[in-house]
Length: 499
Ligand SMILES: [Zn+2]
Image (tube, rainbow, N blue to C red; front, side):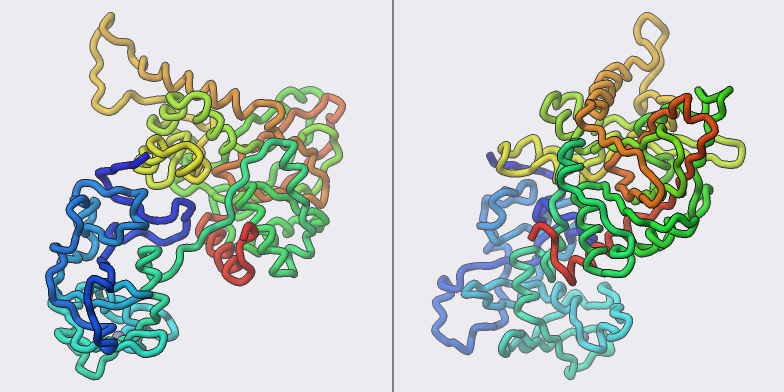
C-alpha cells in the first residue's frame, strides 16, 4: 500500500534512532548517465548549469511524495516539509558520476561540508565558518575526479577564501547521500526484543561486575542487551555504598536531582506498622514530572535479610504492542491525550504533561503505521520512543484546550476523560498480566540496570514475618545522551549485537 503524507517526509531507514536530524529534503537529483549520450570519458565529472526543476518528475509535487518508492525514484522536491532545508533550485549544480549514475549536487551542500583544515578545525572538529557565510551564488569552477575522491575548486567562495581553497570529498561520502540522504550511514541500534517473564529469564544472562567494569567488550555486550531488553542485572557487586556510582559512571556521568547523585531505598518493616512500610509499590517510572526524566536507573542491593520486597519488572513496550493489536482506538487515545505529572511539595514544584505512549517523530510516524501493509513496513516496536506511566505522581486532569464550560445538563465537566480512562484501564491490565512480570528477589551483590522509559518497576510487599529485617538498595540515574553516546562509541568499535 502506498502512503502519501503532506508533512515532513521522513526518508530515513525506519529503525534509525541515532542523533542525526534530517535536513528535511534531498538536496540533489539524479538521472541515468546513459541518457547523457556522453562519449568523452574525461567528462565523467562536469559542471551542469541546466536548471534543475525540468528534471523533477511530474508526479512528485511539493505536496506529496511516495514514501515507499523513494529508493527507486532519486529525484526529490526541495520544497517538501515544514522547513525548506537547502534549496535545490540553484542553477549551478555539480554533476558527479557515481556508479554509472549522474547526481546533481547542490554547491551549497558540498561547500558547507568542506573538511579542509581551514574550514574544519582539525583538533576540535568544529566548523570555522557559518553556513550563512557562504554566498548564495557559490559555484564550482573546477571539479575533478581522482581515484576514490572528488576535488572541487570554487568561485564566489566565502570572503577570505581565495582561489587556492580546495575541497576534497570521498566518493563514499557522496554516495552515502544518494543512499542515506546524509554524509554517512546512520547508526542502527540492535533491534529491540519485547519480552515476557519467561523469555526474559531464558534469554538474558546476568553479567559479572568485574567483567563489566574491566572489559570493554563486556560493557559493550551489556549495553547492547540493555538496549534490546531494557533490563539487565549485574552480579558479584561489592556491597559498598560506592558501587552503584561506579557502575553508572562506567556509562556516563551521574544525573543529579533533588534526591542527590545517589539515593537510598531503605526499609525496616516494624511490627506495628508493617502494613505501611511494606505496602506494594505499584508499577511506575521515575521522575516523569521532569522535562528530562532519567533514562537509565540503577538499583544496587546492598543488604537484604527479608524474604519479601521482591522487585518486579515488566516491559511496557510489550503492552503497547498488544494494546495496538487488540484495540487500536485505545492505543490512539494514549498516543493523543496527555496526562499531567507533578511533584508538588513545599520546596519543590515540578510539573510536566506527557502522553502515555510517545512515538518517534510524532504523528507522522503514526500515520505511517496505520497506512502501511502489516508485516511489511512499520512495526509498532520501531515507532515507540517511550512510555510515560507513573500513577503515584499523576496530577489532576485538566480539560481539553479551549473547552467551554456550559451549565448542566448540556455538558459534564471532565466527560472527555471517559475514553482515556477506558484505554488506560486496558493498558494497566496488560502490564499486570502475570506472565509478563519478571519477579526477582534481589540479594546482596546484585544491581539492576533498566530503561526507565520502557521497563516499569514495582516492589512487592514485605511479609509480616519480615518485621525488623533491613533492606537497603542504593540508586542512581544516567541521562539518555551519555548512555547513547557510550553505546554508539562501543558499537562502532565492536559492531551491533544483532549484526
Ligand atoms: Zn575548505
